[in-house]
Length: 258
Length: 271
Image 1: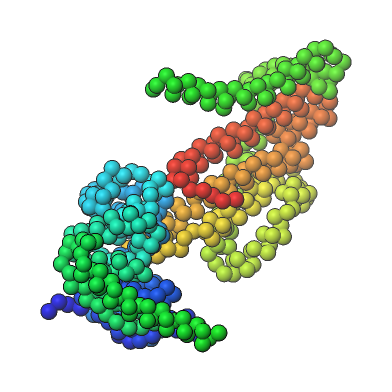
Image 2: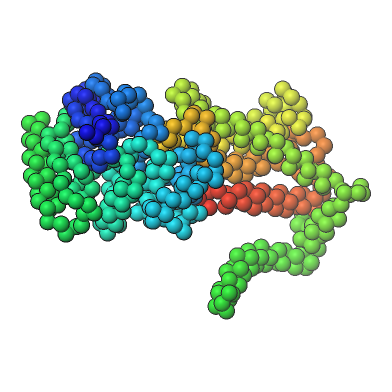
């Protein structure tokens, strides 16, 4: 039996009078790759930020390894859609930052960082400044930066949302490899069904606001997964059907409100 | 280096240096010729060559004529001390506006109120409080330089992506680490821009303030005294030196710092 890494128990989050998330209960296993998908504005990123510790649940409990999450910490690494690199630091210095903060000796930190820079496909760009990199490369830096200080959980907030399709496909392929190499628990938020079925062990589908988990789909396809795999297509169709029901529901809610 | 490359490099060099030389040189040449043709006008408009000779003769440390060095030295010292103080004061006030609610609420209106007042307008007050003293001119520099630094530091904090702090948080950064590794380098480009603009304002205000509130030294004092003695050449020499030093400080010295940070990081500081 695999240990439960992250456990959410009746997690609810309101912003003022707006209820963003209602009664989310789920658990994510150790080294599992879970993707949360849902209509835009459904509060899926809010859920991710609560796991990261940037936001706090209004009620309910959220725990990591059995300990309640009270704030951000180095056991969880985060990657944002818009990269959020430090422009005054080179690629290498961005990637070593986590270890620098953890007071790891520089030589050791650099050796470690270079390993992840290589695995992320950034060799040769160690001394480049972020402003000189393309969007895809910036996101590789952000992923390498989050993996280098060895968090137990990697949190990805629509990591490919700002990338073009071609770059995105390469990133999806490479992220699978990185995940296998790092053997981490990954929780990723996206609105792309293709990304979800390619990457996830399990897809959690969030409904319209106030959102809760409306369905869960286990993607039972061996890795590495290829774009041409026909079973991925049928999973895609299944999730599309569930999601379009939710989008309809969201639309109807808006009509009622009007 | 290729032949074509060296040609284009030479061309860009001649554009960068040659064009300004012609733009400044031709009017000077015309001025020189006119003052040779009409010697009667050379009291109010002394020939550029005679101004240059005066400056040259004053550039010595040892004899009675070496006063110019003293004037330049005092002006630069006042500028340096005033700008250094303004950098400290401006960064602190800018940070209070950027990071604290009460700082924003109290200091923003005060800033809007006092920013349009020329620094020089404070001179009579300081003259009464302090008198003709280095402290008066340094205070004028401090005021003149502070506003740009405050405004730029505050906008640097406003424009800083808060998620840069989130990332550091998720790495377990302490408040001290967030200050030294995120906040300070994050606002540095804005601080440099503020210091650059502030120094420009301060230099202009200082020269004017020295005309009112300097007892014996300073470029402003030198010009003012020369005007009382109807010494036109010294006045023009002073103007040339003020322009030259202002350019060197703002563009060459601070420009260097800017190139080493903002330009290297590829950051645009919006103004």
